[in-house]
Figure 1 (cartoon, rainbow, N blue to C red):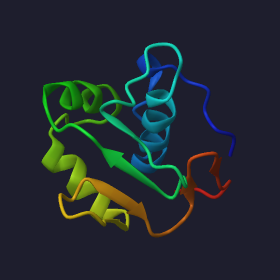
Figure 2: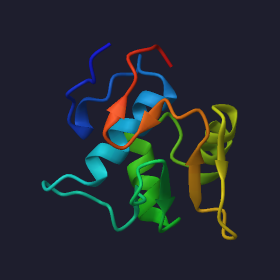
Figure 3: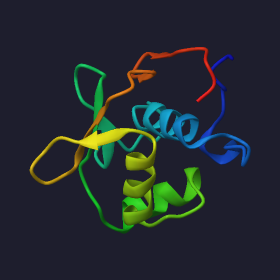
Length: 109
């Protein structure tokens, strides 16, 4: 499966949670209005960090996911095998390693 080339306004309702997460993190680093001051990959690409859990984050989550609530987002992360590795529970490590900063395996999520 190819990586969808979608803008933030074209996220299909048929995409799974991991695809939506990947697109959100990809767009966060975009030169066109990115939001990596709110959520972004950490340097090694095996984890991402939620820097702010305020209304700005909920606005972003609402574009990519069915719910804009941070608590719902965290529950979905846990359901898909992610685990939070920081004291503040804001750095989420990708256990399954199928989703990385510069690569998405071609398997279905």
